[in-house]
Image 1 (cartoon, rainbow, N blue to C red):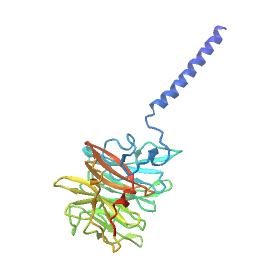
Image 2 (cartoon, rainbow, N blue to C red):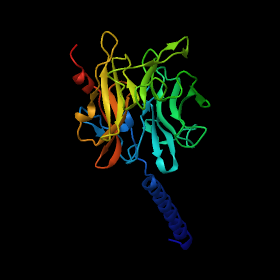
Image 3 (spheres, rainbow, N blue to C red):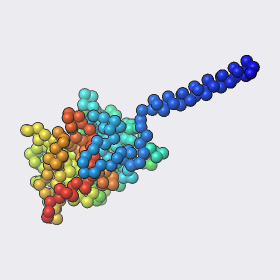
Image 4 (cartoon, one colour):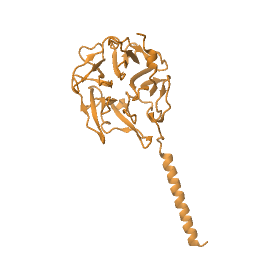
Length: 308
């Protein structure tokens, strides 16, 4: 073999080896896993709660409530940064048969933006925010309109709903939310407002069975308004837990049950939300001083429904 041909062959081998190593290195350095199928490719839980998407969504940091788009192809959640007095809304999308790495949504990242929730028709995403100030001392409800090519600018909801936090919507469009206002029973109560001619014109206090002298917040309403999940915070003895109340035939609410007593594996639990297909409940919980996002089959609620 001539020296010239040997040099060309050696050059080809070196280039091929470099390209092969480059491709391999690129794959190895891509730390985000390939997640396919519904629910970020996670194994679906039964009646025992499991951590949701460990290392991807659940990273031992606090979250607010979460929201799936109506078609299940977008997943929104919040990451809290208490030292910076900031909460940021993140999104992962199902694109080309795999879920994207979570990223900050265009309208968040600077203020305390928390607990996203879709309107029932999926045309708006609601959240509560401390904007235009930093922190969470003055928090109100906001929403962004969804268009085929992205999001509109955040808009603050009008009274009488505001001031409020933590929204949840029924199929009829009725809005459930938390507020501290005159006439309340405790340090935070749950209210509802019906949609009339495209506007929320009046609010109703949910009253006995749900609201107490303690703090109730972060409601999650069943699509048909047959049950209500929410968080209750009791200062002394200190404790945070998820409660459930069922709506009776006469429109009143049953005495709320503490779901934390069922799952005593959790030191605390809060921020309940329902999946887009109504099959699963999501919530934040603390185990051994570690906080993560959990999910469980929603059928457990029927087991708790009292005989009427």
